[in-house]
Image (cartoon, rainbow, N blue to C red; front, side, top):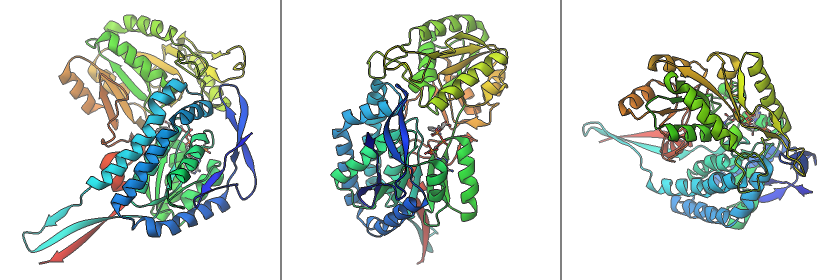
Length: 480
Ligand code: NDP
């Protein structure tokens, strides 16, 4: 059985305790590798290695850092096929999705920030010729980068790329649920010649590995993507230490379909937004608000579209939905569907675990599910489910839909479908959300400020916002 190892100070190492956790393949329900059950001791050694490496990495000229990172991106690309298969096996997602979205984004993230540092500039404030202020931006030290299981390599590289490009060193903790591609990345870093200690990856549970990482006195900067509850915990324990913290958290995203929308485009995009990656993307549109006059027609079309989606073997290129990430998560989603029915919701299609005969019969597959008849303010329409479940809610007016869309504690993303561009702009401006798409979904430009409002997060990442986050501004004033 494959044994995953920690990557510390340029070497692949066992956890000091010698303890391991089981790693499951969600499509078969079977253990297929072992994950280091790391603890404070491993974290401390990794932080020390990163601290030592910071001395030279932070002084390495930008062009040289950029060259090293570009080589890392090239080496990731060389192993794309292995990474695609590994991500799919570890997470349950279709290989076709990992090939289209997850794995290409890893080298893209690294190249983007390796290029961005060469084009960054700092500000000058001229005091009418009396004095000049200029802003220096310096890396902070060891960055703690904590990432979730839904887009494992994609989100890990989204954090480590700007952190390293700006001259910080990193200790990363991937989700223990999906550690495999981070492990493969460790091997790739060694092959690509990343200097030792610049990136360290410690695997293990949130409480045993994540806590000592975020609470350590030598991690002044923390970039976290994950659930809102974990985000609250990190904010609470780090606040007294005045750390710089970026939190990208959960969402309960509204997709709003006006009667004047391009109907077919709205149906297919809403379906993609609900079910891509088994509904396990923080940006998935899980609440579908449909204008009353087209509600019945839209509902019929969405059910028809959903009935054509194939749930099955992630290796099969015709599969649309693979397995959800774990047994616990599958049970949580199925419990939420039951709750929806108890609250008076009607399951229009799906609603059950799907058993696939053969070697996948113990896999964690769930049918794509559409539910109607729930009030906008019930638990199902307020709390994140993070599975292939979407609810349909009719609305009469623009004002009404804005109020319902804004009724949750979240504010991550929204999509609006209308052919009336003034209405599109007006509603976009009124939605409490860090990202709004009009007539599309998941169209991402790496330069934009990305993040959530309300309990979907604190701060923005992306483009120069990430470089700002991973550096500390220092003003220098010169009297003339
Ligand atoms: P979790 O919050 O459970 O975990 C995220 C990461 O934090 C994991 O690596 C986890 O480790 C770690 N962690 C857990 N406890 C602690 C702790 N006490 N200290 C430090 N780290 C800890 O989220 P999930 O992995 O379940 O991911 C799904 C969530 O992520 C959803 O809510 C989703 O909306 C959100 N998300 C947000 C995105 C955004 O950009 N806003 C993007 C993608 C996902 P372990 O796995 O070992 O518990």
